[in-house]
Amino acid sequence: MAPRRTGSIPDLGRATGLWRLRLRARSIGEQAAILLYDALSWLLLPVLLPLLGWHPRLRGGLAQRLGCGLPRTLVGGERQPVWFHGASAGDLKALLPLLAHARASGLPVVASCWTRSAAEFLRAQGDPVPLLRAPLDLRWAVGRVLEAVAPRLVVAEGLELWPAWSAACAARGIPCVIVNGRLSPRSLRWYRRFGWLFRPRFADLRLVVAATPGDAERFAAAGVPAERLQLSSSSKYAALEPLARADPRPPRSGSASDPPRLVLGSLHLAEARQVLPELLRLLQRWPRLVIEIAPRYVHQTRRLLRLLQRGGVASRRVSQRPPAGLVPRVIVHDTMGALAQTYAGAVAAFVGGSLVPHGGHNLIEPAARGVAVLHGPHVEHCRAEAALLAERDASFMVGDASQFGQTVDRLLADPTLAPQAGRAARRVAEELATGAERITLLLAPLLIESAPTGSAR
Image (cartoon, rainbow, N blue to C red; front, side, top):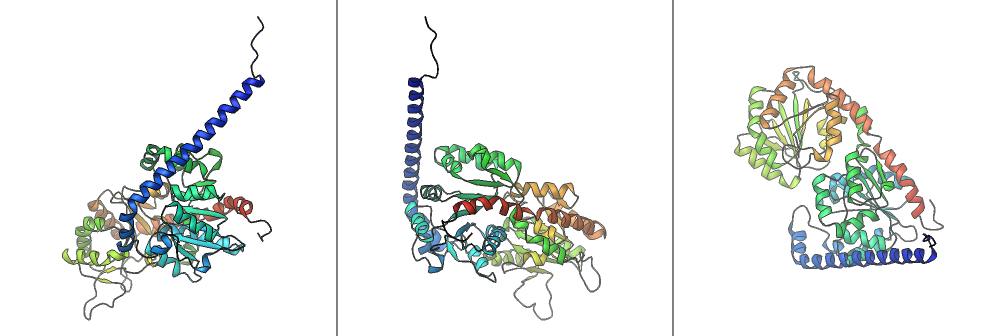
């Protein structure tokens, strides 16, 4: 009997047919997933609308969230803009170097955000960028905005992956990119649990610039093709190198004209409650110490002031003059955008979101000012930066409030410890400041590829 031939034309036709069936089944499955997501979103809409109208962090721009009332400045016209999206003020701040480079290259830009503080931050820039409040993740709302703005490319910060938004961009051939990508093990487990909805959306991403090798591995596990993954330090550090070089002031160690300062930046209320007894003890032990606190959310300033008052700590807002005859040694910042400047010249800076499980906030901002960095054990969002600072003896990890107080005591008692750590921290910030340049180079091919035919590039 003649041997059976493999790879025959009938076999090839059968394989091609099976491949097409699989593609069709996948397409039907993806559409069914989005339809189910749409239905769930509609059910939640009666809850979301009052929340967006009332919540102090989210309210404002409700019409734009529904795809209505878009300003004329947002319409891209013949030259489609690059759309930069960040959820919070910190996210938009991280995108500013990339946005500025796009504008300098002659490309129109649009920015979107979720929170009020982010909108206020962007409007406060010297050269404001056309801004919209991000549409709700409903296909009809997202579709209206995409049709009006007609972006050539969507660049999102961190992990802003919304199913309806991503599907609407894919349907219109608009490439989506994630920069400064972070994906925790916990988030990966969540995305895998709903893989029927999210895995196609991860697969649609044209580029993911991950913050660490671990993040890149998790993005790959979530469905991003390996050839679309790149690594880079965050673009948010681009603006910090000039600050570090331009502000060489040493930490204030307590001379007669310059009292020592301790800064607590991006502090959550739960953290304030934990460290309050230690702050009171430090003020008593170090009579000239000045403590400046920047709450994570400006709208919580009143609650923070009441908390300090109940704890027996006299304090004032930075926007208020001190009462006559009384100069409180605890100052609470109630304005946006001044934290980086506040760090300058401090003996040490504690960065919040790290004593409580919020993942930690920007450790490199005080480092760029040449300040010794303190943080808690919860640094999931900045693990690579925390490891680099620790490796260079530029930071101090404090496990609880008591250890926080003991570490501050050491820094105040030893006139050489804080300056050494501060110099090491500054060097780390300078090394990380090249992230925006690398990300810009990675985005360049996509910007050229997505440019409309005949437009200036």
